Image (cartoon, rainbow over all chains, first blue to last red; front, side, top):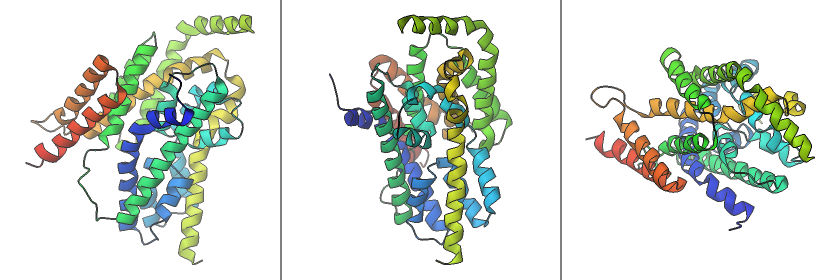
Length: 241
Length: 112
């Protein structure tokens, strides 16, 4: 059945709604209860910065009136893992035109997970349209969460404790899909072991970056044994052209 | 505009620039290298590795690892997601069941 790009994007991004609303709200509540700024600065940060952990760190940096250079460096270090995300999407985003800057801007953990796990047809323009809409939906959920949290403050309507498990469940589902799609499961085991090592030996703020770096190192180590597969793929592609 | 608002706005711009920069770097430097075998290798297997490590790190943070729970409050719902997904392969069903069971455990069992 052929569904419209927007329907596809809404269906695929729905789990992120359940994760981003409560997480954005957590940030919003923190923002409005700790700081003395107007509530709408919280969704503005969701619009312009768009980084979960980054924005939560930003609240404590704002409280301490941190210098701008320090802020820049802290954000760079906290978000350093994103440097690796683009690697998997270089080809998918190539030639995306006006959509490309936004696709890159919106590459959060969750958007990356959705975009790298979904099936793709050969119709690149259409797929980039879907990628764009998924990215846009995700950011709208996030901004909504930031706004709701900051606006409602502490007067929350219902007990949503634990609803953010939706993101854990999403990562599990996507991990199973990756497991089924790939012939080699080396990367999955490398990721799980790297996470355990990082979680046991390092503080929470550094665990993601350390674990991702360990996975990259493991993939570099694995590369020589699989190099021949890629040159073969390239030659095939050249024959097709 | 008072000084406080000016500080907040420059703060937001600095944070946004740094965040965007981290996401932009691979596209800025490796865009032309995308057919290089090493870039292909990393690009192909990184998502699986990153998904696995996100699962482990987030699970560790979601659970209560003190005795006698030993993380079962998070591992139980996680196992439910795995079983349901392997059985039905319906992403939304797996997610809803996992999240709802986790919420129930956190809100009812833990507080009692």
